[in-house]
Image (cartoon, rainbow, N blue to C red):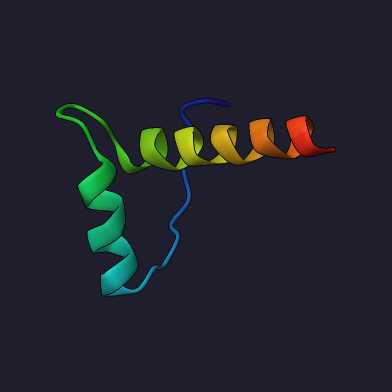
Amino acid sequence: MADETTTVTVSTETWKRLTLRKDPGDSFDDVITELLDEVEEVEEESG
């Protein structure tokens, strides 16, 4: 399942913001996963 992919359309501004969060070698999937993990952690702490 990890090899399955899909296309997500984002605005140019969102693409730029995601790019700023990338470390060398990171994919956009890595960046989005990290952001989701952070949000879920905050939700658990405040929940």
